[in-house]
Length: 635
Image (cartoon, rainbow, N blue to C red; front, side, top):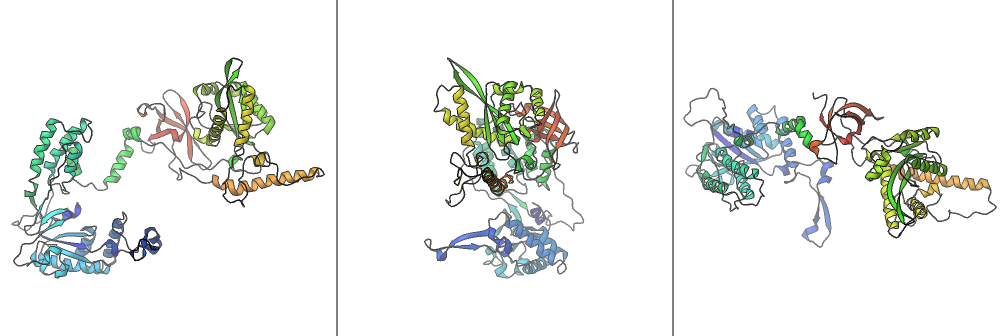
């Protein structure tokens, strides 16, 4: 837009084109691998394929325009001391990609400017050619081979100057008028057809805005009816549309002087631009579209970012860089289940006489070795859970740390299970933990993703259970207990490292390698005599345990370090921020507002859980369950 407007300022107009602009800008050697392509040698499709690299920028690359424009401006900057200000300014302000459009006061200035700009760009490796002008004198100063194609075979003294295009706008160089070319399209009278014809009218400066506005108003009226794109227009809209099309055919008769200064105008001392626009609601969109807003994209983003209503309807959930894994996930050498995650699942229906009763499952997951331990719960009350915990402690040892979801949000649990867990006497469970010196750590409510290590195990257990239960009919208590043990053995035999295709590689590591000192039901490697001493057996057991932890450190632990998402840190939420509480079970428009009253930064100083106050209560939530509406820094 700016190039076209400056093109209309002065009486003498000149235009040129950089020949093969992109190919004249070289690609740095270290970047050429990104521009590799394959080629058949000598054009033979059955022959060998060769790999080539582009050494210059290519047409169609989304980066090519910016790289070429940078090279163009660099040529001007490198030669700023050798050329006058007008020449330098022409390169920086009067090019649109490879097209140069310039207007000057006199023919003499035009002749000099053509020569200077060509010389400057030649130093940067560019050839400026295909010159055209509304001045025959300027054209005669330009070698024939450097003129535009239409000018090479005409007599500049007698023939009329041809019509050219200035950035897509028709330019009659003989009359120095700007005009429009329209080729009628046969399109159906639908919203799609209307928009197709409307967008085919190229008018970057906005000369046709009064005419285009009427078509846009028809389109607005049809959009308000929420009709399909290929549904016929309303009868009154169809009549208006047909009338508009009949007028559109006459735009080729409409011309505008290229130069804003009239031919018989005296010497101009100063100039001002006065702009008039329609302020009506119907014309608002059409008028604004035609004028270039400086840094519009950045401005629009800022407006949308600060719009509370927009953020309430479309704002993204907060997120933070994924935290480092807790120490209990990555510390080797300790016995299994020293660091444990616990969750519940079910119910299962089993036979008792002629009736059916419900049973539940409790899964204990070793956070280090990924081994599991399953216990059957006869009910979902506090005593039943404590009994399961005591059985686990008796068989696996007392853990140091037990992690679990908050009792109100066991992911995948049915409503009945969720309500039962909510009714647990957590004080009684905590007393049991304290007696055993166990630290029980809860994830924030609604943050089931923080317990993914055991949630994933529940899905694995369910998958195996469903496969086995499909073969069982009329299962009873003893059968369910046996089934839990079988599932536990199956899951603990799964590989936690990569399974190699090579028979010479070691078998993949499994949780059973540390629980049973073997992968599954096979016997331990090696042969042992009854005469082996206890000390030798102990050494062998210790050797197998050491082997497990060495492989665990080498093969399993590195895979835990990769962050699949949330790779970059973001600005922390702060006390006083206004947020929207996410609730997947209700429409976004009714999500409640809340104010952050406390934040809980991690060891790295990044906040991932917060305390919020709504009009009814105070809650703790992970930041992934809130949308920031207004920061205290923005207030």
